[in-house]
Amino acid sequence: MEAEATKEILLVALGGNALIGKGQAGEVTEQLDNLKLPIRQIVHLSREYSVIITHGNGPQVGNLLLQQESCEDVPRLPLEILVAQTQGWIGYMIESTLDNELMAQGWDSETYLVSLISYVVVDENDPAFLHPSKPIGPVYSEEKAALLPFPTVKTAKGYRRVVASPRPVTIVEKREIKKLIGQGFIVVCCGGGGIPVVREGRTFNGVDAVIDKDLASAKLAEEVGVDVFIIATDVAGAALNYGQPDERYLRRMSVTEAVSHLAAGHFHPGSMGPKVEAAVEFIRRGGKRAVITSIEAIEQAVKGRAGTEVVRD
Amino acid sequence: MEAEATKEILLVALGGNALIGKGQAGEVTEQLDNLKLPIRQIVHLSREYSVIITHGNGPQVGNLLLQQESCEDVPRLPLEILVAQTQGWIGYMIESTLDNELMAQGWDSETYLVSLISYVVVDENDPAFLHPSKPIGPVYSEEKAALLPFPTVKTAKGYRRVVASPRPVTIVEKREIKKLIGQGFIVVCCGGGGIPVVREGRTFNGVDAVIDKDLASAKLAEEVGVDVFIIATDVAGAALNYGQPDERYLRRMSVTEAVSHLAAGHFHPGSMGPKVEAAVEFIRRGGKRAVITSIEAIEQAVKGRAGTEVVRD
Image (cartoon, rainbow over the protein chains, first blue to last red):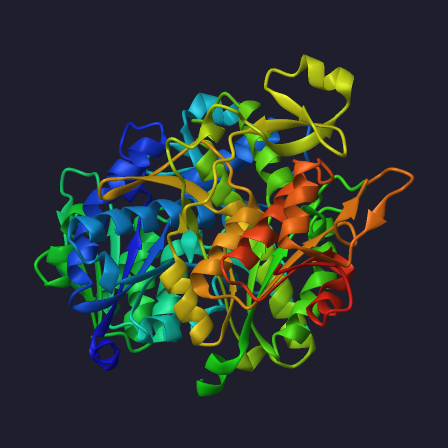
């Protein structure tokens, strides 16, 4: 166990496309299949790093919301419970894929795995509660979106439902996660950005919201002392003029450059924006390395050969 | 930490009524409120014992199944994924209630909590796959049950949907759970009997089933070396002639007596039967103490003052 403590800590935040690929409906078999590519790389990296995996849940939590709205026969659940459900669902898919990959590589008896329920404190006065902005669920056409009974927002891919997305204040299980890492566990946690709760005196109470998983991951990374923070998504990194003829991917940007590009609107608020913001916050709070990269290039990004790295000024 | 290792290990399996009381619809606020009574007792017991908590999910998983059958817009999920969802949902409710109670008692900074995703290996040739028998979801009247598009069974409370319920072979996370207990964690695991998987070569694959949570708890208790196994439910213990004028609660029964009462049909196959069977299996495999008791009397049962204890012959 002594040896484990000397490993650097790597946090990989898996984006939605690690689970549901372009044009896929989101069948579980597809999601399990998609996970193999990132998980294989993470298992390789686990020989050298203590590993934490976080993950998104946007499409999944949106689907659960649609399902329960379609059924009058059983009580509806608040949004934080749906987030908790996706932690069970996606945590199981990630852990069993990890298990299968560890068995395939013959390391299963040496490795401890845990997928844990995580909840995250938010501020009840966060202005996000007044301005829902986090896209969840399926993508709709503009015509369809206009007819939906809930608020939507235009994202890079089309229109999606939005819910409140307050900022993460602290990860409730940070002590536990730190201890588990120290004991050599691979830890899957903070699924979907964590179950949002507010602290009222000596009680935690769930709230109707979804926390951005990249911002929650940055907070966790700060609180447990992560060394390398990888944000894995469906593009090669952050780009200026994304989707335009003069689109230009960045290999490195300083914190100051990143903040200036954010302000200039180069990074889409519903997708790349929070990723850049999360990387910036991690580096500002003393983190060593933060890289935004594609699912395919996680290993290369850790080695400094792919993605967009946000560096200190 | 040394001290933790010398504590006896207590496993409390929480039945459905720890979450949904008689006549309740199953609103989340009700479930969180109901959990306070058992959790308060478990927090007291955690000063003296290393604690594992398992829980049922019958009403919850049945509700999720109904919800997704009501919605054509998103892909349906296999039953094992719904079980995983209930582990997230109920694990969060239990852990946050534990957290609140630990804060109320001033012990929160000394205690590590973890609710983990658990999956459990079953045998793909288990005859249960041919004979669905596990009741899940809401209770229906006989008239309503006759019209439902899925198989139902008559339980002590009324008619309920049934699904396959194979026997647990091994808990995949047993090494992790043992290590966590040794490190002083309170562990919430094996929710709903665990996510059922079959092992095919070097791969785990989910299967369409639900494992009985008391049998899974007995298997876990055996595999991690539990000392005291408490099965908490909505009656005071096991009774002969349950519900009849000559009903008689038992304070103790030997393994041989229990097996004989089971064979004579004294314990309902959908409710008390698997609890008695789980207690018998635990004692037969070398367990020290197994008690079936009410949610109200968990502490008293641990102290030998309540419930039905199954003892060695």
